[in-house]
Length: 148
Length: 432
Image (cartoon, rainbow over all chains, first blue to last red):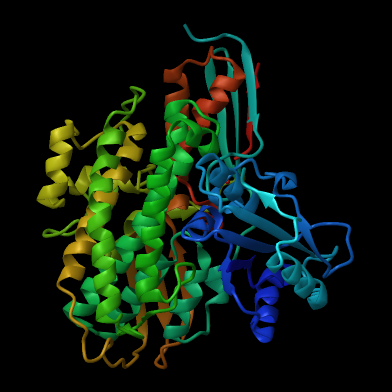
C-alpha cells in the first residue's frame, strides 16, 4: 500500500497536488490511500505515522513543461524560506524535520507537477505521466529515495 | 556602559513569526533614537469584503482571515450576532464552543512554543536544529499541535478554516464515538502538558522586568476564553461594547496595520496578560503544577510568555477533557435565529490576545459596516516600547548580530501574526 498525499491549496497552480488526487480517485487504482492536504506545514509529519510507503505530490516551480509530472530527489528541495514562519514551513522543511526526528517512512517519493510561469492559472495535469509514475512505484521500480 | 558608536540595524525579514515584517532602529550616542517595527504586508481589506453579506456567511468568511486562529474569528463574530439577535444557544453550545476554542489555543500555542520560541532559549537557529538535541520535546510539540487540530476538526469539519460554527449553535454535533476517542487522546496528552509546563519552568529566562498594562477578557468563575468583560491591571472594567470609548486605533507611516492604544498608552494583550489578570481562575490541577514548579504570576517579564503559553496548554487540555467527559449528543445542535437590525459587538480571546469585532447589521441580518481589531495590531505599540527598553537593558554595545537576535526574540515573545494584523520582520539598525 502506498499513501499518496496531494499537497496544495485552492489558489491557482497550487491546486495541482489536489487535482492529482482527484485524477487518481477517478481511476481507482488498488493499494493506494489517497489524501488531500491544505498546506500542512509541520502537520505533514503526522501522515508519516503507521505507513511504510508514501508518495507526496506538490506543484513545483520548474522550467519543465507546465503540468509535467516528475519524481524529485527530496534532498534537492530547497528550504528557501529559512523557516521564517510556520507559514513558510513547507514540504522541504517538514521533510528535514522528519529526517532529524527519524520519522520518515521507510520509502518516500516526492513527485513535482510543473506549475508553469503563471502561477495564477492552472496548467493541464499530465495524467498519463502520473499514472505511469504510479505503475512504476507499485512495481518497485528503483527510482526511490530512501530515508536511510 | 552604553556604546557611543552610532548604530543602524536593519532586519529586513523577521524570522519565526507568522507573516512578514521588518525592524529598523537607530542608535545615536548610546541612545535609541528611532525604532520602527515595520509591517509591510499589503492591507487585506477584509472588513470591506464582508460588507453586504448575511450573518452566517460572515462566520465562514472571517475564518479565512487567519490560518492559525480561524476559530477565534468565528467565535467573536458568532458572539456578536447572537448578542444582537438576543439568542442564548444554551449550555451545550457554550461548552462545545469552549472545547473547540481549546483546540485552537492548543495547536497555536504548541506550534509557537516548540517550533518558533523554544529554539531561542537553547541557542538554536530553528526547530530543525533544536530537534537534533531535543527530539522528544519537538515530538511532543508536534503531537500536541496535531491534537489541537483534531479538536477543531471534531466540531469544524477541518482544522484550517473550519465550517461547523453557525449563529445559534453548530451545524452538526459530533458522534458519541468520536468524542469518546477524543477523550482518550486528551487523557494521554494531559501528562505531556504537565511535562511541558515543568520543561518551560526550567528555561533560562533573561531578567527584564518592565512596567506595562495587561488587558484581557475576564470572567468571575472561569478562565476567560470565549466571553467576559474587558479588564486591565490599571482598573479598566468595561462591557466589550464600550471598547471604542477607551481604545483608539490609528495609522503610523511604517505599518500597514493600525496601532491601538488604551487611553493614549500602549498595552499588552495575549497569554501573559491573561495569566496576569486571570491566574486565580485557573483550575486547581493546573495551579498545583505551577505551584510545584515555583511559578508565580503576575509577571512583568515578557520572556515568561512561553511559560504562559505552556500553562494555557495545560489548561485547555484539562478543560476540554472535563467538558468532553460529560458529552451528551443533543437532539439539535442549534437554536432558531431571527435577525434584527442594530450594532453587534463580539470579543473573545484568540491565542495571541483579545479579538474585537463590531458589525452594523440591517433587519435581514446583512452586514452594513464592519470593524475588526486583531491582537497583533494591538500589540505593535507595546512591542516597540518593549524593544527600546529590552535592547537598552541588554546593552547597545553588543554587536549587530547579538542585537538582531535579541530583538527578534523579544518580538517572538508576542507571537505576532502579521498576516492577521495587516490588515511583519526584516532588521535595520543605524548606528551614528
